Length: 182
Ligand code: GDP
Ligand code: MG
Image 1 (cartoon, rainbow, N blue to C red):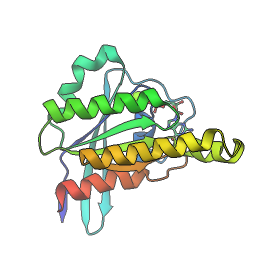
Image 2 (spheres, rainbow, N blue to C red):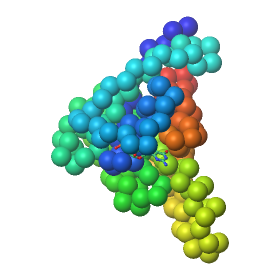
Image 3 (cartoon, rainbow, N blue to C red):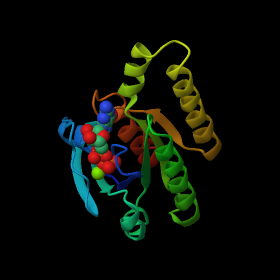
């Protein structure tokens, strides 16, 4: 069976890794110096998922404050949103919460929302290199904080890495399956 997906939007702070997640998902690539997105970029990818052919249509937004007023153009018609933060950047997590508030106030009420704690590979690196009682604990707490938050607001939650590809397909598929097949 062929299933045309309703489209998705990626929101989150500049530098959180939105474009990198799309690039990983659509092309299987990662670049260390990903250029900042200007305005927004559109991606389309057709894939076999279980027994269906699914067309993923994705708006990748910029994240800079000066483009904020454009965001509703991209999220208003979206069936699903992936809100991205960087696990090594607390401010980006606070920014992600603001996006969740905005979508809950002004977005499509049936929109499926997923929270992606990106750059999960940095967590692994710091666990290895940091002293036992310094950095790791705060990162573990930050992970728990995100899990608790996502549960409270009814969001899917996953830590992802565009660099290593961890959970990248999963976060795009999970909202697809929930949004279109349930
Ligand atoms: P955007 O502004 O949200 O679109 O963020 P970008 O995709 O442009 O990524 C910002 C920077 O973070 C780039 O230098 C990327 O290479 C880097 N980056 C993105 N995702 C990851 C990741 O999962 N792990 C690591 N280590 N770096 C990442
Ligand atoms: Mg970008």
